Length: 438
Image (tube, rainbow, N blue to C red; front, side):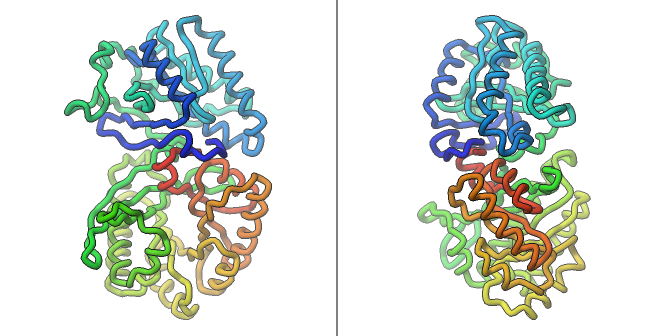
């Protein structure tokens, strides 16, 4: 989760079949060298290579991470050398990922000791972290720049020789009709690790003679006072299949109402399908549903959206927050009228106003419980970012009472948003899928 653009680093984490494994791709030369070493030493054979995700420590350290980063990794290295002798080895894979190869011991013993190192490091730098999800993953080398990872449940993780077999039997996904390891039941992904693995679902719709690929990314939503994940935001992605080009926000705003309605309903359908596919333990309490004002202004599309969302929320025991978009130029009395038709079927409604201060004032006294802003993505130092977000937060709270920021690229920005007084935040699925968490 470095401030450095991850396009020059990890290329992303994507779903990789039904085995529970996911694929983590790197572009950074140092990481690729480490993967080559792992492959050469066969450290990934029989489940004897592990990755520890440091996101939880990074978030708790907040602004101190820049100073503590080197100390944390040095602490991990020293703890490892105290517990393991050669030929076991470890390395910093990237800012928030630490890799350990424990080829000299059994896989379960290696996993247990890596878990001890994680807990000891957390205790040393941020205090007790025993109540958090263990961010430990088993690792297989898939390609020269690609790893397969799967989260470990220590209650079910035992010596893996029989699972992985000889090195020659380990094949990349897609090299044959089956995954290289059987399915294992694991605990739900923890709050902070979920962000690194956004899930997408998609469908095809026809608009203006063109096939559009509408995909939904489920983004994690955080309540920042306690830095806890409370829900999921259904973020739409629309791709013109003719040129394989993703439509930007301007193109979406330019759609006529009927076309935008199709996009919104397809996004809702795919997002609810994704949430239903998760176990109850993997779902949080809140669904944030972005939808255009024009879609909710139409009785037909509003009734369809509300019916589908309300049924899914009831079935899954979740609450609903509607995020109304496309408000520019809409009279306040018309917004109030539409919101009054939505509120009986949800927990609350917020208005999306982009990322400009003047747009926040336009939704004052429109009946919203809060304002949702889109982070503009401009690279800023931590101090400048905090001041920028503080201005937005103060304006949003004065206008509607609460401030949610959508579109962050990494957990560091979320931590800064907390300092700036932002009440809720989400990390965009597009950034996570394209580049991994910074």
